[in-house]
Image (tube, rainbow, N blue to C red; front, side, top):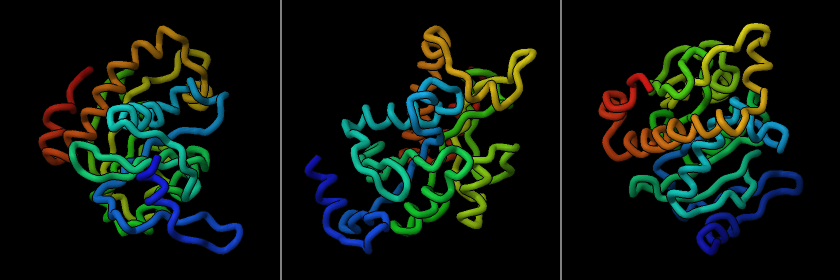
Length: 215
């Protein structure tokens, strides 16, 4: 907690503005997990990005206790490197408002931004790492690309599969998962955490070679 106070407590902003984070410790990486705030969404497939960020925070021994930049953030060491972990609170489709604010303040280049999100086009639990490219209809990714003005950030895609018959895509991503399904995703969440760590420690190419496999 002391580190976070040092990080967030040194600057004042005009009334109504988000308080900025201290630049005393520049973060080399920003890692954002996409999801929706609120208990009603906590178990939804759309919140897999949040779950991976929670896993990274647990591994680093930090908590998301500070609300800044329209999100909750934590300072951490990931694979030995300083990073800012962020979960946007803007709701999924406006994720760019939060992510762009963080990267702009810390002057983090797009190639040092890692975005973790769910993906309908991948089998449940399958991972796919990439940099740049299209958003495949993912409005959270689209929001980040449009707000940053570039697609050149790194993405860790976690497959959630296609909707079952009779369920549309929106219902599928927002539907709460049962205990069994959440348990089945635990392995994917752990591997996604490891994928982020590998990107930072060994580079994207090696991470792609290791994790872009069938689950």
